[in-house]
Length: 237
Image (cartoon, rainbow, N blue to C red; front, side, top):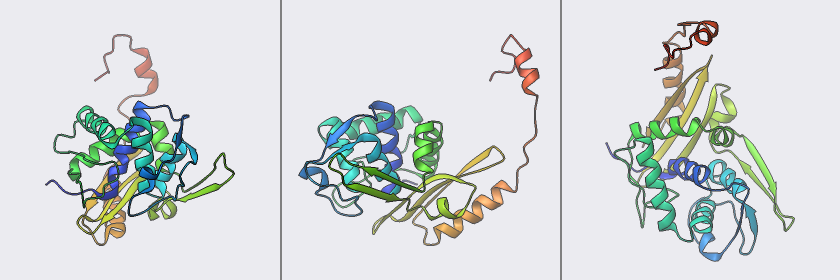
């Protein structure tokens, strides 16, 4: 079922930036970047901020202004950036997803995806160490060239309270309801939970993760020694 993802969209926004741009670059903030509703990191016109810092503001504080700063600052306009987002979808295999903006707001433009596609997206994103680091960060602060310090606290409650949580993203709009993506890892076994329009999402994710992680046992198929001893790619699949 195609649904509205709200701010879980920002998982794709973050991955698109990481895969296509220099995170050490800087963006100068304009009025068009901060003229947006919803959650913000409260950027100010003419401030200069590092791309990497914007990604933390995007993922931890769910800054809609950070999403526009990245889209406009890196691609000159939102449409060009959204094109890259949809190209990333194709690479990942998200066959039932289309995106029209980098933040998940759904009053003027709408993003559509499925729970399965969001699972594919999160799985692909977690393969990137930079994304994994950002998505799992509890708190982050950065000092701008002007001397102003920005503080970001991760809105994903389970990252603060559950040691098995490795990342995730929250979301909410009136039309989409509460949306939530969470990844968990136990003894090297990682799973992803996606829920949409779920009022009890924190509890649902905890219970789904607990049930799944307790239902599987990891067993060694062959040792590293056996794998390294083979020279004909016999075990590669």
